[in-house]
Length: 459
Image 1 (cartoon, helix red, strand yellow):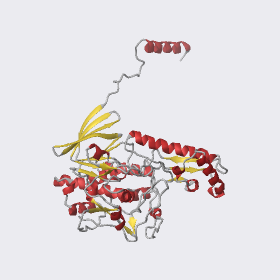
Image 2 (cartoon, rainbow, N blue to C red):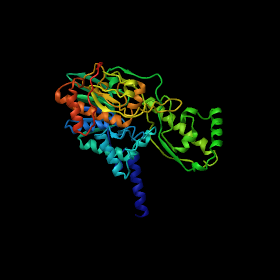
Image 3 (cartoon, one colour):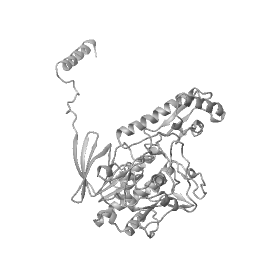
Image 4 (spheres, one colour):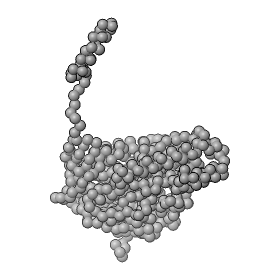
């Protein structure tokens, strides 16, 4: 193109831009407007985390239409988005106690990533983490999505419920998402939000401790040789920084050495961490990142740590505890540590009582041979119809919940909830009225392990 042609083109563009016309390839679009959707499904799963993704797959595999709404951008929750990618425990006392859909996915993630499983035949003693399974969280998120789609589950990311109304034996759920408002009509709801948000909106009673467990931002650090550090000198500098108010002891359990030895991982504590609302979750995430940043700056000034760096960090903090439902049965600490049996046991949970507080955490191991069970009634809010809760929000006291809330247990609960919702539709019953024997058989048909029914004087 010669100089005259260039000037001619520039002139034409100027006229188009200043004269109200459009330059070629520009497209006029409507101003932003919210899309309204009306949808209908059999089972609506709210929350695609550890329990919800498994519930959706199980329900979908029964042949029912399933819709899954998730407020984040991927499935897996604590394992994937929060990065606590070492689920457990699936084996107790040398025997597998949790299997089914969740275990199928864990095995796939291990195999596809070229990882290996722990030797479950070797007792873990007081070191229960030796039986946890390290998996690739990104791979696991993709596998969850694949299995949901294969089961016919409709996934709707970036959506959260705003209202729930039960009428004519159906639920009508309004959700809001990016540029979308939807009304979803369904026959059964499974609340796997982790905060019992759907149960709360539906008007069911919840409870929450005055002091909840802290959250954790998962990350890894590197760039130093731990063996060459002067640990005593570092401890003195750390205590001085705390005395000056530069650092807060509880943010890393008062143990700067553990932070360096473990290279980050699951060592941080964020007091008051709460994922119930966008505001409280924002606060938890900011606190976690602020804490990490100021500790990084402190460490970088110490001998041998000049090159310390963050190697990875999850996008949000993991939350251990918020709200739990007031259910038809409340699992107590005594129930949990004695391995109480129930007439409606639908899953096992095997993990120490694991209550985190300002001092850290000292797990209370279960006595030899004890494997706690989960009664189906603990998943059903009082006075509810066609409504199930699975995951850490089930009805339990704080100490029992500290063991129940872990990932393998939540997977087992999710599978039971998915099976129960499907069976309730087939029987035209509310979940509380289901024949437990049939529910157990359905779970077992899909690979799950259920405890034997035990008659109790108190029911």
